[in-house]
Amino acid sequence: MSLSLPDAITTYFSISNGADATHIADCFTQDACVFDEGETHRGRPAIQAWMRATRDKIEYRVEPVSVSQQGNTMVVTATVTGNFPGSPVQLDHAFQLAESQIQSLEIH
Image 1 (cartoon, rainbow, N blue to C red):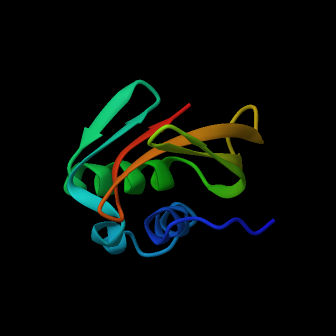
Image 2: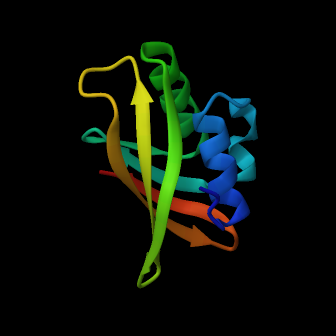
């Protein structure tokens, strides 16, 4: 399924699926915040480190399957498949954008 997503979110999913993490500045604001698995990662360097550490820990693939708008939040539901217990799972990625970049992301 092909979804129409803002460029920043498309870039985020490309990086999540193994593209070069140095492109983090192409999708996140300087002071962006990511909340995942009970932890908060604030700022591009911390977000880049979180993405690399997750990639080093497990192999996975993220496939967006639906998108909805809830106020100023864009929620992308994605199927995550990999070498982790319970795979595959569907996770909601709640994005808030600021001037075409991701300001915050919560993964549930």
